[in-house]
Length: 548
Image (cartoon, rainbow, N blue to C red; front, side, top):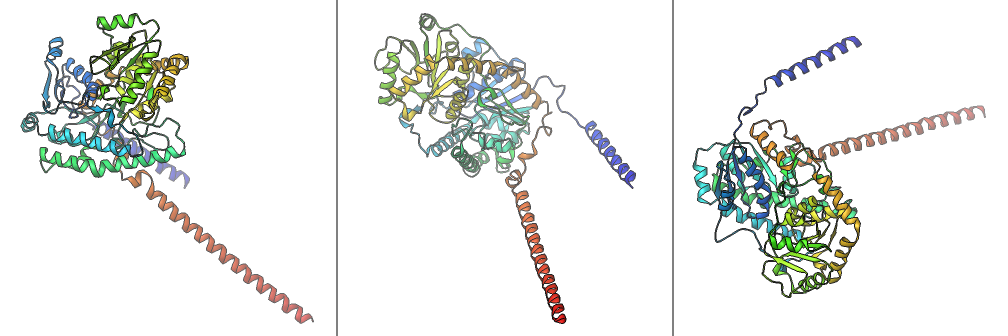
């Protein structure tokens, strides 16, 4: 009989393999010979720093001859068009002159960190989503596009704080991929079925260094659950209302469209944010915005930096924070410390002059950040932990002093601190003593510089540039080769299956039943043994009576 079973098994394997090969031979690939693609880019968020990440990819796709239609609040300027005409790049401007964009809008008087900060973060993200959806989707140019008979090979859009723009995916029936300017938001991980295990992966909002101790793991778990529940039951219902008004009442649930994303390009890199499991269609393109060459500095800045042989501190709080709103007590502490250090300071400051003159400090309303960071005399970056400036500092090998304010800045600051190349200060505790100590540490302890250089080498060392990687994935998805080969089954199963709750319950019930049965059997066996022992005892007793 054994040979018969072996023959049946071998026959079944042969049939399975032949069926699998036939199915593979019948697979049809789409657009494999199409070299020029029609691409729709949808970027409704008003944050300039976000669009600065995506802009190099969009322009490079246009350079390669692909036809782009880009919806955004940041159309190419006349100066940019004159410098580099891109005839296949078409802007659909969402600019609202009354509303403006998110530049120099954060008032530092409003920054207070406590246990309720995560709730304020959620409210702020929702507020920005409401603005983006209500203004963007009502734009006449968008309504005209929706009435057109345009066809697109692929749609690329930001995956951040709203799904209301995913109606374009349904309207034009095109594959789409998401772009994230920051670490992946928790709800996006859920849509992809991507790993976000809170036992060892810190949430983007908590700012924990690794490894996390037990209390941090508890808070990380709680935070992750709050974020996902808020998105499912607060964000998405509001997004659905905006989207239905723009795309019609027959629009599917946005959560269903979100799960159709075929790839996610993320502005991170494992050298900085740490190694963790990622699906093959979750691709790191950290540093996408970093230019391939260093441009010459303006003459006055170059002269200032060239003469700073003792070293320079570069100070910038990014594009959204208005430095001039710094609370007076903290500003006085910063001015006192910076004015007393034996080094020059170049500072992005939104006014022409500081409240008091400092001989060693140059202030500018705008600075060519990457070029400044790469000047050999610049030795330290004092910033807020925004991912663009932080990534440029990592690329340039600069140690840092970081004062995170909101959003992913805590997470980014914790990541670079874990790598040993930064000191992190809490904004609540920013004073003369803490700032002076942090700057002394970073400038005078060679460990920070050495770690920053090591991190820079790891960050740069990749099989392809971030831009090349992003272009390849965009073209790959447009060719139609992504679905269904990249889709994780984990994204489509309910939460209780993903966490094996049903399996655990069955195993618990079966184990309990087995334990109960074994207990009853043991009890029955003991009863039988007692009965047999009693019978034997009675028989022995009867025997002795007869002898007597």
